[in-house]
Amino acid sequence: MTAPRKIIIANCGGFWGDDPTAARRQVEGGPIDYLVMDYLAEVTMAILQKQRLKRPEAGFATDFLRQLRDTLVPCMEKGIRIISNAGGVNPTQCAREVEKLAAELGVADKVRVGVVLGDDIFGRLDELAEAGEQLEHMETGRPLADVRDEVLSANVYLGAAAVATALDQGANVIISGRVTDTGVTLAPMIHEFGWKADDWDRLAAGIVAGHIIECGTQCTGGNFTDWRLVPSFDCMGYPLVEVSADGTFVVSKHPNTGGMVSVHTVTEQLLYEMGAPEYLAPDCIARFDSIQLDPDGPDRVRVSGIRGQPAPEKLKVSVSFQQGFRAFGRLMISGPDAREKAAKVADALWASVGGADAFDDSKTQLLGFDSCHPSLGDGEPGEVLLQLAVRDADRKKIDSVFAPQVVPKVLSTIPGITYLADQGRPRASDVVGYWPALISREVLDVSVVVGGETVGVPQQAAGSGAPGEPFTPAGVSAPVPDTGETRDVLLSQLCLARSGDKGDTCNVGLLARSPEIYTWIREHITAAFVKRRFAEICRGEVERFEVPNLLALNFLLHESLGGGGTLSLLLDAQGKTYAQYLLASTVTVDAGLLDTITPVAQPVAG
Image 1 (cartoon, rainbow, N blue to C red):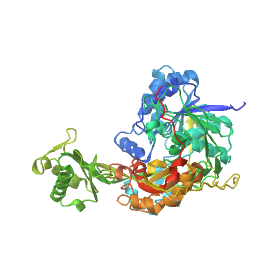
Image 2: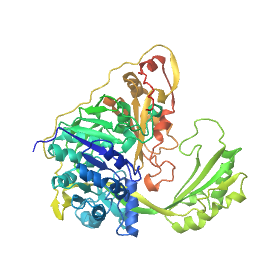
Image 3: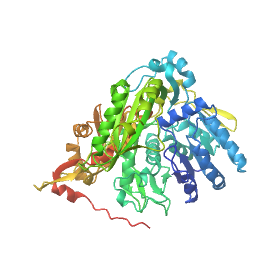
Image 4: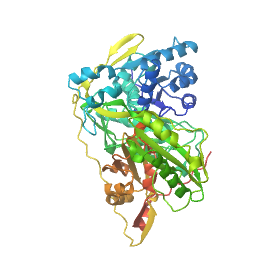
């Protein structure tokens, strides 16, 4: 059989809770070969595990079934294959529900479900520990044994191999647990083009394609720094990748949809949740400092030049564990003098519960004014939402000491205060901690089940295959203008940015608007500069990485998300706002630097 010249892979969701109409719109909007859905994040795995503890038949993303109700029949009619990691911590049950739905919709004879198994190692933790797999915390070095009794789930990040095997076995609806965001996109390429396990450059291209589309509309104009350039946010177009056998691909979207695709929208997404330019995935290491982006017509960006290196020696494991409880209380404080009043209420609340330090962690925030960052101006708000939060190992202390004292402050403190109708007395909720670790590939038992038949998927030994060609990233040589005239400008006039989270670390990718600006930010926007900017938030070190091919710098702000995920008491526990706050910095530059920026025409919504 001759490999196809091109396949079209459509993403229809970047997280559990994304637009439920996206799948149908991707199927109806134009020709596609694959529909891929990414539902899982570290926080999502914790939520699913908590659901399964309450109901054994739960533990998967139920939105997947709602989307299939709209799309399963047309997908079977058009020959579109569906791939999703919606299985969460219970992929087998998810598969059963899909088969029930197929029978209900009258397409049971056309649907062939494949299930990927082997990522869930919760039941093997003690066995693995005895074999030497201590699953030390990647940041602290502590062995998992320290929290073994509190562990709720443990899932290995699998790559594309198992999904590709399911495709080889004829599955047209594939459900997995913790297969990586990029793996669900790479797998169809391996299957269709016959890429080998050590074809590092092509595998890396698939990883990059998956990273670009994994968050849905974040590469088609959503969450975009230059949001005013987006013609319309109505009926946002979700991304497509048109992939050729050589690994080059084009990022696009269906016509007559909202959003936009440009070099800048794609670059921002490439920087999202990025660490070092050597991007580690289970299948290979993708060199993000090799990516070349070029316009390819309206709402089309061609991606090429990607280089890859052998896969990392070990695979990442996501472990969730019980880590106490937390609660939030919220009171609306109106002006005049809203901030001063809010401070008085907060002081009274903490005094009535034995002090803010009576709990393992506590936080006072003013939502709508400075809840994410210090104020950018001196204006007095008309009202603020006072948020008071605690976290503690003792649920009873939260429920009996903190919770009863919040609402009474409406009558016992300042004037102009009320509580939210849907809030009332705060209630403690479980906190599930996140424990990242590494595990040896050879101890895993990965398989796929298709049509009742189980097929083993051997894990390629690290370092096997060809080593790949050496790669040195190209530099940027563009001198900074020197006119002798300086100007104070916002960093947003020089750069775009995107930020995201990995546990308690936030990344902020900074993208220069010209090569000359990149030369300037490389010298002036240092790790120390970013550390000062986030001094009230970032408790750890700031790392900086250069990505010259993208005219970008990437910063990792360690210990900046209040513990991250479900542990954090911060309003923005996922770092979504951090890029905008960095861009609001004022910097002094040579006036000629502004002339290096190519103006972008303001699109008109059609």
